[in-house]
Length: 154
Image (cartoon, rainbow, N blue to C red; front, side, top):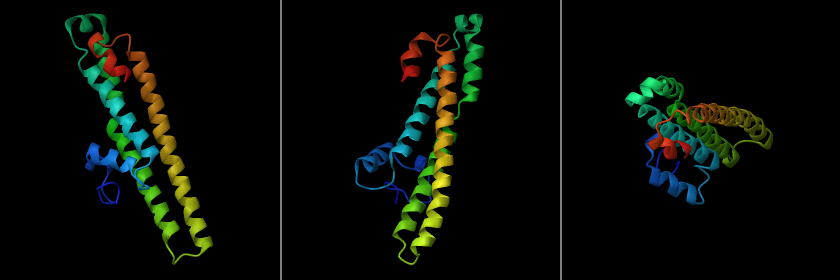
């Protein structure tokens, strides 16, 4: 189980409270990498909301509204959640391999190496998506509706 969800259910199916409870526990899943992916998705969603609310008449006159639309179209919090699910799923598979008493040490090592490659790719994807979104947000801050700048900086 991942928190209170089954291994084949994604992170989005779990309540925020259950996810946080799982992070605070001794369970191996979710881990810090899952937390960073979820936190990044929340940040991206918040920035996307700020962009969606930058449509006052002065925003349209200044061009900020158009820039907001471009930023919003480029942000995908759902993709961050999806790649976080991949990371958590492969990490769970890796834990199961370690615990599998029917596998020899060599078989475990071979399978763990494959898992580690997948985990590395997923975490690299999370990092690259975070960087892309930070750059989008940073470029948008000066045009963002001032009421939402505090939300956007979160």
